[in-house]
Length: 617
Image 1 (cartoon, rainbow, N blue to C red):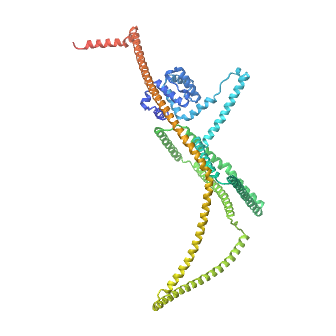
Image 2: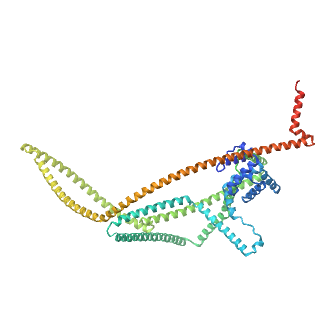
Image 3: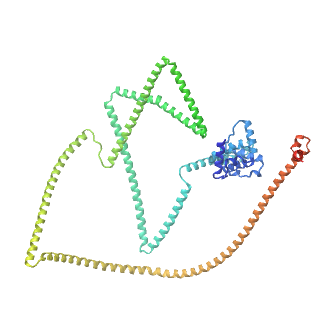
C-alpha cells in the first residue's frame, strides 16, 4: 500500500498535475479533496470531465466517474457485492477504493487518453428496433455506422504515419525552407531578367538556352535509361551464369552418378531432413515457446520491490535444500536396477547430444558452402566488371601456363636489353664527366694565357655580350607584341564604352523621371507619417486610459471576490456553530441521561461541582 501511495504522489507532483504533495499531506486529504484529485486525473484523460466537485451532486459525480471508468475498461476487484461497495466508496470518497483507481489511471495515462478519445467516436448509440423501421432513421443509422468504420480506417492510417517516422514539424520546416528557396529563386530570376534585357538579341539567346536545357534533360534521361539497361543486362548475365553453373553441376553429377549412389544420397538427405523436422526443430520450437511464455509471465507481473526479491530468494533457497535432500535420499537407496538404467540413459543422452551436434555441424557446413558459392559468384562478377577474365580450369589453365612461359622468356630478353642499355648509360655518364673536367682544365689554361697577354676576362665578356644581345632581341620582340595587344585592347574598350553609352541613354532618361517621382513620393510619405504619428499618439492616450479603467475594475472584482469568500467562510462557521447549538439543545432536552451527560452544560456544571467540592476553603 505504501508503494502504491508513493507512486501516486510522485506522479501527481509531476506535469501536468503539479500538486506538491508528500505522503503525509496526501494521506490526510479529506474525502471531498480526494474525489477532486481523482476528478483532476480523469479530466486530464478526458477534457469533458473538468468539473468542480463542490458544485455537483454526489450521485451525479459517481455516475459520471463510473461511466468513464467503464469506458476505460477499469475492473474493480471482487464480485457483485464488492461492486456495490465500490460504488458506495466512490460516492463517499473512500481511500481503499480511490487509491487503486488513481494507481491504475496514473500507470497508463497515455493509453487511456487514446482510449477516451476513441470512445467519443466509436461507442455506438443504442437505437430501439421500432425506430429503425423508419426508412430515414435506418438510413441515418447506416450512414452513422459507415462513418464509424471510415473513422477507424483513418485512425489506423494516422497511427501508421505517426510510427513511420514522418513528423509534422519537420514537414512544416521543409515547406517553409522550400518557400524561402522559392522566393530567393524568384528574386534571382527577376534580377537575371533585368540583366538579360539590356543584352542584344536576348530573346534568341533565351530560346537557345531553353533548347539547351531541354537537350540536357533529354541527355540525362537517356543516360538514366542506358544505366538501367546496363543494370538489366548485368542481372541477366548473372542469371545466365547461375543457370550455366547449375547446368554444369547437374551434368557433372549425372555423368559420375549411378542409380545406387543417387538413391543413397537421396536417402541420406531424407534422413537428415526428417531428423531436423521430427526431432530438432520441435525441440527448438518448444524451448522458444517456453522462453516466450516465461518472458510474457515476467512482463505481466507487477514491478517487484526489495521485500519481494527477498521472499523469492528465500523460496529459492528452500527449493534448493529440498532438491539436495531428495538427491541424498536417492543416493541412500542405491538400487542396482536404477543404476543400470541410469548408465543406459546417460549413454542415450550422450548419443543424442552427439547426434544434435553433428546435425548442427552439417547444417553449418551447408550454410558455409552456400555462402562460399555466393562469394565465388560475386567475385567472378566483380572481375568481369573490372575487365578481368574468368577463373581458368583444365586445358584453359594449361594454355595459360604455356603463354605465361613464352611471355617470361620474352621478359627475360627485354630485361637483358635493358641491362645493356643501363651499362651503356653508365659509360656515357662517365665520358660526360671526363669531358666536363677537360673543359674546366681548358678554361683555366685560357684564363692563364689571357692574363699573360694582358687581356684577362676577354672570353667571359664575349660570352656575356652574346647572351645579352640574345636577351635584348627577345625583349624587343615581346615589346612589339605587347604594344600590338594594348592597341587592340584600347580599340575594343572604346567600342564597348560607346555601345554601353548608347544602351544606357534611355535608361538614364527613365532614371531621371523616376527620381522626380521618388522625391514626390517621399514628400507624400512624410506627410502621411506625420498624420500617422498624431493618430497613434491619440490612440495611445486612449489605450492608457482604458488600461487604467480595466485595472481599477479588476481590483474591484478581486475585492468583491475576497469579500464573497470571507462571507462564505463566515456562513460555514455560523452553520457549524448552529449545528453544535442544536446538538446541545437535543442533548439537554432529551430524557436519556447518557445524552444529557454528553451536553456541554452538564460537563461544565460537573466540572464546577468537582472544583467547589475539592477546592480548599
